[in-house]
Figure (cartoon, rainbow, N blue to C red):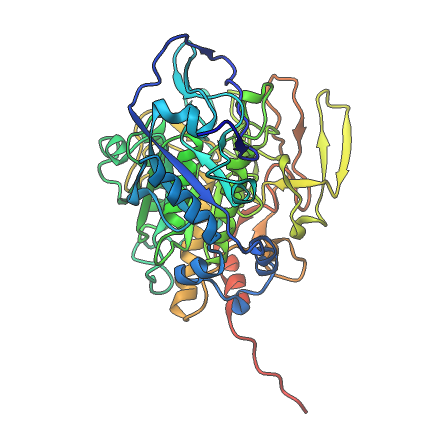
Length: 546
């Protein structure tokens, strides 16, 4: 085979903190699925997104699946190289996990070192384990010359460490404020459960990404839930104990805010490969879902490098989100529950990042403040360390209040993405109703609740747009940050609270007039927000010349 290898840029890995290599332990399965993500030959997807997100909805031309696969197809020589690689080493292609841009092969564990330049080992902590690697993934140069390797965005599946956490907390109610009903009356969600303001289109189902389990894992917990599993990655390795609670909560929020809406579930492993597979399955939909809700994430950085996302994964996921936006999909993602500790993909440049709020009064009525709980968690927000400042956010400025409180540093025009973009109620009381109610004496709290609430609002908006034969809303970040639209007037600015970690010496951000790093531009007023989207999507009246 030869010793020369071509490295995959951004694939570096080190052991996860708290885990130790188990000498002599077998990595397990005979064969594992390994996925190649192929970069588009056309590199204009980023500039096309930047142009589109600031363009009025009426002027947008979203891509069909055929259009996307034509305009943003991978290089033919890269596809040929991966195909020849599979044939040469007798690696079975898994068609149900493959497409034009994602090729998944069944790879014998014993061949991983020779084919990918890594040794697969078992790493264990006190409670968990994963199959992992160290160093960089490299491919045989005789099969993948350096010029061909540039067309491969990432190789996923060799390392199956945990890379997703739910942004949901179970908080006892006794002795603590309840903070009102759901959805908040002041938001103005339709009170009648009969249907949306318009006729749903074929794109109306809300796609929910659920990581760390399968449909069978949550059906017993919420048998009345209306979600349909559209995609389920086989052989889940990193199961999450909170998978069922998180998925049931997502379904409950949708059933309370948009009870007529259908939900399509995309379940996958809680790993980098799982993220790629779930988003790939949504992206390849025909028709593609018009709204996606994601209540999962992982810190961008940590004290030790083993906690980090690989750069290859971030690049790949950013591509998937950008292509979804070009297809007309709105992606709503929880910003995280760890205050100023920024989490991805809530920090992605191509999603609507959703922070959390709570009512100030126990009745739930009146103004809101930044969400926090007695466990020390709070609405995620701040400055990304991984995602560059988007073009549509360059006029945004924030003030950061560090610990101790007398340190106040103004930060204007930062070099990296600021988040969140918006916020919503992050507290769900027991027996609130809906198709998947949770019983008991504890509330569910976290920005996991905010993302499906915003997704439900966009489902309502898209139904209204569809009834008038108008484009779906798609990504609205550029319009939201622009000063010449009415979208920000349809949001309630949050002026109280901060996202500090209670009892911990950590940086924090405070709510303030305008945009802030706790709640973005604020919480929705559903009817005015939909009217603003309709105004952006409707044809302009003809000019009258005198």
